Image (cartoon, rainbow, N blue to C red; front, top):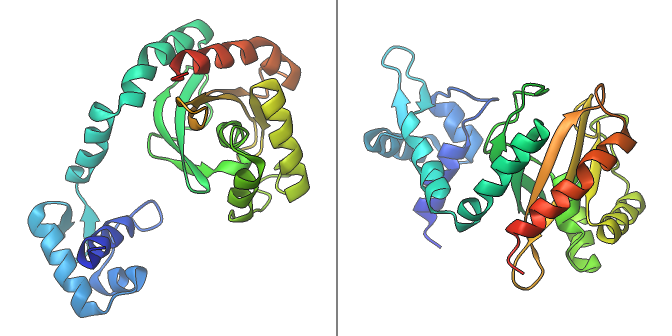
Amino acid sequence: MVNSVEKAFRVLSAFGRQHQTLNLSQVASETGMDVSAAQRFTHTLTRLGYLHKDAQTKRFELTAKTLDLGYHFVRSSRLLDRAMPYLMHLSKETEETVNLTVRDGTEIIFVSRFLSRHVLNTDVIIGTRMPAYCTAPGIAMLSRLPEAEAMAIIDASDLKAHTPSTTWQRDALREKLHQAAAQGYATAFEEVYIGDASIAAPIVDHHGRPEAAVNIATSTSRFSHAEVVQRFSSLVIATAHAISRV
């Protein structure tokens, strides 16, 4: 473990929607460093081009160069390369928003996204993270793990109700995993955002373990729960199966 590398990424990770710009003392506070260490790391990252320091306000912000890592991931990911034709086909066939997500710990990360003209939430972009336990892709992926492993991930999550419709209690989540495993897909209706409906199927690797998930996101104002399942369940299952390495 190279501590200086970990600290550099800690500095970069301190910035985001909540903290679009930070001064030196704020960087130190957000990263748990002293001001002297924060000064060295911000100076180095500025020299490397990953941070910009405003000459007047002395505040730091991320630069476009930080997109390089994401770009290299997109260009080198075998999963994305394999999935892209099927995601594009699903997007054209349904004219709904189609997403590819992977799991990172207790969260899912959006790694590809095809928006429809009916898109509800423009806050969700590539790189967005959401809790796995209350999203259709998250439940779809967890349902392909051994139950003890899936429940350990749920137990490590910050379980709470994001909306009145969120499934967040342990026993209810266990039942949801069983249901998703039996039917081959998972659904989530208004569990994170009001008006959002999602259906997802897991993409698995050679060993049958979940590698990612494909999901269709639409609106509860346009489709009922039953209509979402009727229209899209077979499509997400077929797409996920086509991308899977089994």
